Length: 226
Image 1 (tube, rainbow, N blue to C red):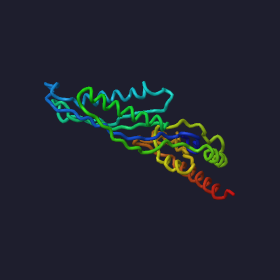
Image 2: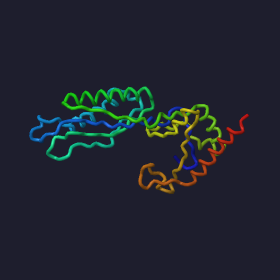
Image 3: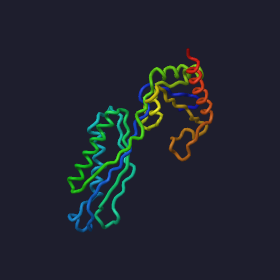
Image 4: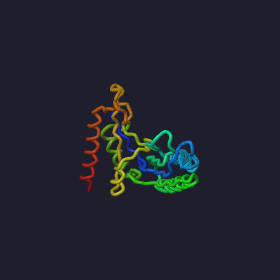
C-alpha cells in the first residue's frame, strides 16, 4: 500500500494457518522388481495430486481455501523403490468449518490412497493461528480516527483478505480488536514496492510515523472515553 495510507477492513482479513506433515510408509525393493516393494514415492505423488482436488472439486470456487505443499522427500537411492516419503505443507482458509472439513478429507485421502497401493499414511497437524477477523465496531472507530489524522482519501476500507496468517488473530479472539495495514510503498524507492518475502524488500520509513500516530490515537481515544 502507498506510504501514508492505512487499510482498515471489517471481517476476515487473514486466513487460519494449519501445518501438516504426511508420512507414507512403503516397502523397499530393487527397481527391477517393483512388485516386491511398495513405492512410497509413487503413493506420495498420488496424494499430492489428490489433495489439490479437495480445493478444485470438493470446495466451492467462491470459498477462500488453499492447500500448499512446500517440501517432498522420498527414497534413498535412484535404483531402490522408496520405502518412505514425507511431505509438509499448509492449509489456509477464512472459514473454520471448511478448515475442519478439509483436514478430515485429507486424512481419508492419504490413508485410502496409501492402502490402494499396499502402504500406510498418517498426518501430523499443528494449528498455528486462527482466522483473523476484525471487529466491525472497533474497525469503524479506528477508521474515523485514521481519517481525522491522515484524511479520508488515505483510509482504505475494503482491502481484499489475505491467505497469509498472523497470530494477532489470537488477541482479537480474546478481546475485540482491529488489525490495520500500514502503507509502506513509495514508487520513488523501488525496493519498497516489492513483496514482503523478496530478498530486497524495504520500507519507506515514513510508514513508522503513520503507525505511531494511529496506534497512539487509538490508545488515547480508548483511555479518555467516558
